[in-house]
Length: 169
Image (tube, rainbow, N blue to C red; front, side, top):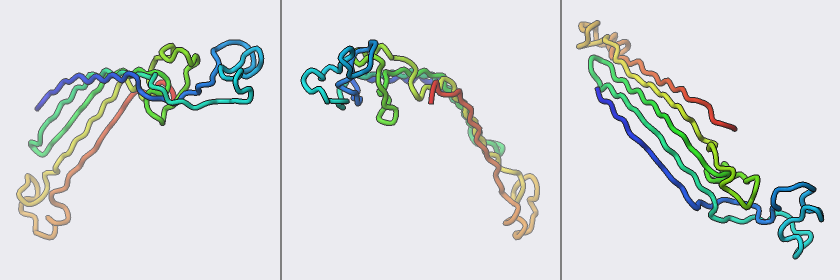
C-alpha cells in the first residue's frame, strides 16, 4: 500500500491572447457613435474591430494531489486519487479554445478570476480483480482444459470518476 501526496503549481505571465485593439473604454452610448467613439475612429471613421495578439494575459494553478495505490496482491489491485485545486486566469489566458475579452480592454487583470477549466474537486477510483476460478486458482483448479479456456482466469475491472462542475461553460 502506497500513499503519495504532492503539490502542483503553475504560473503563466504575459501569455498571448487575441484582443480587439479598437475597443472603446467602457461607458454609455452606442459603440462607434460620436458619444462613444472607438480609439482609432478619428483616423479611420469606418474602421471596426482590429485583431491584435499582445502578451497581456496571465493564469495560475495550485493543486493538492493525493494518491493511494494498492499493488496487486490476493487478486486485487486498486488505485484511488483525489485532487483539490484552484485555477485562476484573465479572459483568454487558457488558450485559443477559451478566448475571451475583458470588460475593460485597458485592464485585463480587472477580470481575473476562476478559469474555464477550474474543477476544484476530482476523485477517481479504479480496481482490477482476478476472479479465483481456473487452473491453479482457489476454485476450479482441476477444471478440464476446455472449461478452463472458457471460464478460467477472468478479470473484473472498473473506473469511477466524480468531479465538481466548472464555473461556467
